[in-house]
Amino acid sequence: MWRALRCVCVYRASGSKLSGSWDGPAAFMSTLLINQPQYSWLKELGLREENEGVYNGSWGGRGEVITTYCPANNEPIARVRQASVADYEESVKKAREAWRIWAEIPAPKRGEVVRQIGDALREKIQVLGSLVSLEMGKILVEGVGEVQEYVDICDYAVGLSRMIGGPILPSERPGHALIEQWNPVGLVGIITAFNFPVAVYGWNNAIAMICGNVCLWKGAPTTSLISVAVTKIIAKVLEDNKLPGAICSLTCGGADIGTAMAKDEQVNLLSFTGSTQVGKQVALMVQERFGRSLLELGGNNAIIAFEDADLSLVVPSALFAAVGTAGQRCTTARRLVMDRPGNYVEPTIVTGLAHDAAIAHTETFAPILYVFKFKNEDEVFAWNNEVKQGLSSSIFTKDLGRIFRWLGPKGSDCGIVNVNIPTSGAEIGGAFGGEKHTGGGRESGSDAWKQYMRRSTCTINYSKDLPLAQGIKFQ
Image (cartoon, rainbow, N blue to C red; front, side, top):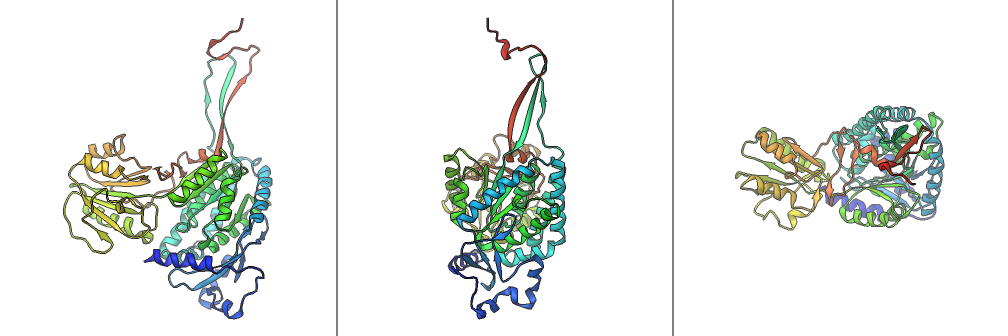
């Protein structure tokens, strides 16, 4: 399975660290895919045999060197020098200096820069999508689609840059104005997972930028080349606009860098995407310093097919939701609940378990689908909600009453509640995220931009009197 291959890749990436000199044996360097003619396209992304994994206006890195591997065959692609903690601290300093410039630029002008980033990604969409497929392991069409998602969120952010802001509220006091003011939080730390090494960063980066924030990114070590390639594209846009490159900083690294970000009071918001187990640790470290976190954690998602479901929709939806991206999406369908008997193909489909079996309540990053039979609506809605995660859910039915009960307060308790479509494949226009052990954070569309800003309620007295709220008078 892909999961097993990815585990091998993780081991190889961490187990092949080299300290000291960049120079490696010539024989090993010749085996790198980047040196083979059929992979010469990697150099179109500015990649080399040995790549620096720190960017804060200039490229560098004083940490260890890792080799990244293709999970399909364990062939080495290229090498990346990771960040040291000292590199991280320097990047934070430069990012905060860059914020002083970036925050002063009007939001629509910031949106124009983000538009250019989207255009630059469009120009590289095929080659960058190919790198996603090569280094992460998903099929090419999904790799290209992931880059397209970053492009789409850039387009969305451009329009949003002219709409962010708060309302003017009626004041109870004569000669007073009550205004809700939104300002950037400052430095947004972004930690992303291996399964969506481009799109999840894009969700955070594009929205955070138009809000006036600077970003510091730590991608997964196993997809370090993707992090470097994306940052090179962004850095060129910032350079062309004569802006500090540290607006979009990069520190490739492992747990030491992630821990530093979580504990650092200079990181005003930390967006973390990953497992619930690690997310809990991140949340505790951030909360200990009264910081702000945006958590996108695991999912244990159910598809429910009622007796009136259109099977021509159910079958392809369940297939895509269960095995798309080799079952390594947080929105992957883990549970299929049917009101009728059926015939299934093993071993990827498992039947005969109790709905509350421990394994069925465990998120497994693999194309494994557990199938259950239910008796009535109340029962199956309860089954949907009984797992600890609350990310995505879907029912298949034509009953309008049931649809709106599903959407209502006694229906699904997930952040994504679908009808007649899969649990996977969210559009960028809506807020993405979930409840309970999924973390509660929201990224991408709708009003998710508010998580990247701080809110102030401002009262302005433009009269010559000083009336107090609630009619209080001191005699």
